[in-house]
Amino acid sequence: MESRRRSSLTALDRPDQWMIEQGMAGHVLPILDQAGKTVVKVFPPKPSEIVQNKKAIQAVGNRKKLFAREREGWVGYVEWENYPKKKAQAHKILTSQTFAPCPDYQWGPIPGTNPVLAGDDFKAWHAALGGELAPVADDSWKTVLEEKHPEMLHLLQFPYNGEPPKRLVAAKAITPNSLHFVRNHGGIPIIDADKFELKLDGLVKSPKSYTMEDLMDETKFPRMEKTITMQCSGTRRIEQIALYAGQGDEVPQAPWAEGAIGTARYKGISLKKVIKDCGGLIDHAKHLELYGVETYIKDLEVGNYVVSVPWSKVKANEVILAWEMNGEVLPKIHGYPLRVIVMGYIGARSVKWLYRIKAIKSPTLAPVQSREYLYFNQQVGKYNLRPIDGIQIQEMPVSSAIMSPWTKQVIMHDGKIHCKGWAYSGGGRWPERVELSADGGFNWYAVPEDQLSKKGKWTWRTWEIDLPCDVEGWIEIVCRCWDNSLNTQPLNVRAAWNWGLHVTSSAHRIKVYSVNKTRTLTQLKLSQFEQHNIDLAPLTRYDAVPGMTDAELGEYWEANPRDVDE
Ligand code: MTE
Image 1: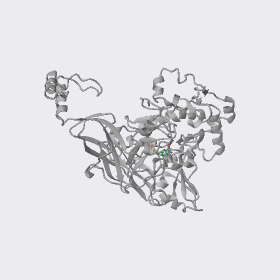
Image 2 (image 1 turned 135 degrees about the horizontal axis):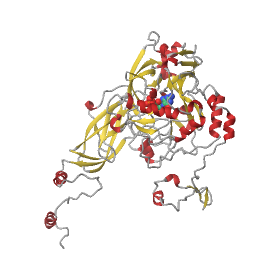
Image 3 (image 1 turned 90 degrees about the vertical axis):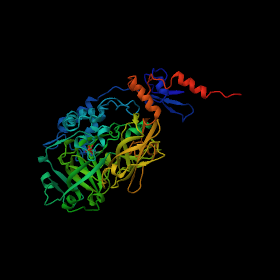
Image 4 (image 1 turned 45 degrees about the vertical axis):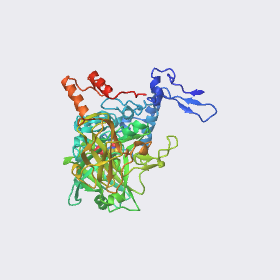
């Protein structure tokens, strides 16, 4: 057997050999190339030294000047889309050196830290570009600490990605601002609203610029207020990761749990009215490209955050330009002073720190739209996939999640397990029925209507149920939702697993250990613990109270002999 690129430790001389053999560290296994006459083992490369071609970097020019702030009062704003040469210069800087790869967080165990992942690669890229971008990582973290709830779970420190703890995800039908999840692809710009301008150009009759005051002028643009659930297509990604490793970039594939969803009341104006104010679309424009201020780096190519939405969606008054969230000025972290809210679409289209809208003919080719948020067929493999093989994710399918209890928890109950959670469907559909099963998905109990929060065209429903459960031991509680179009969820993760690890739409499953206190023997055992002052130990630990005395045992076997007579 040949072998290529040996790492310092081969798979044969490692102390963690047993773990490797059991698939607990798949990333160190050599790839087996069995295509030729002999099998070739391709080992993962050795960690390479970080190198820098200082001459090439210096030749690009003064980074402070090249990547300076584009506008006064717009901290963190470097314009890229108008300057192809500047993009090329940034690319040259990033490709004239090497950076540490992001950690192999999908192979486990996931770090037990908060922030879970640091985002060292994005921090290093920003530092390498310097200029206006140099302080962005530190400044953004300050904003996180200022604006978000102290209990937030920080999945990625930079670009900041965070979700509320399970206990608080669906505690209220409207998510408080400090607890609303945050999904960023770059830094958090700090924009002075008095110096703000929104540019509307491209294929419109009369391109225009608007100040916040212009947009808030009620004589021109009627106000719009709506309660809207926003969901990131990465919600519940951790279940896909737990099944199989997939695409492994920290930002596109942040390891979200069930909290990348939140509901808020947004106030602003309809984008349709602003397009009309510019004289409408011309030359068969069909899409609107939306630009966010901050810098996003994809494959070492630098740009602003850009996506697009179809005109049909805007025309239906389903795209808001919002400046208020739950009665408060839009927090900086959620896009101050102006963001887009696209009803019923994945969060990615709801651009924060919006500064430009451009009318165009086809969906934008910008990376977030055309190279990410793609839903691949399972059998399109890493080495043959093309962006066109993935469906561009727009509306989220119906989904749901159990927020309480938690998986692996021991639940003592009196025949009913109290469960809580959320259910949601994208595209303006809504949850009609939420069902739970305590037997892995065979028998289903519907959540009573009065235990579901109010229906809304664009919103989730939070729910609670006392789920009947007679048995003791490990059970699997499953939750699924039916929306008003009678769509429901696939029953297992594998059915909807995909390489990009998006849209975990399968029924949510948790394993819990049921202890039914209405059972006589269970009651007896627990009362004995009390009598002997024995604390309840973790499930797997020995509890020193015998199930029966020897006398009781003897009596039983006397009456029920084990052996049969000849
Ligand atoms: N807008 C900008 N400018 N930059 C971003 O990184 N992330 C998008 C969207 N808008 C993003 C953005 C994604 S993927 C989501 S899910 C939502 O914002 C999250 O909005 P929130 O952070 O306000 O919850």
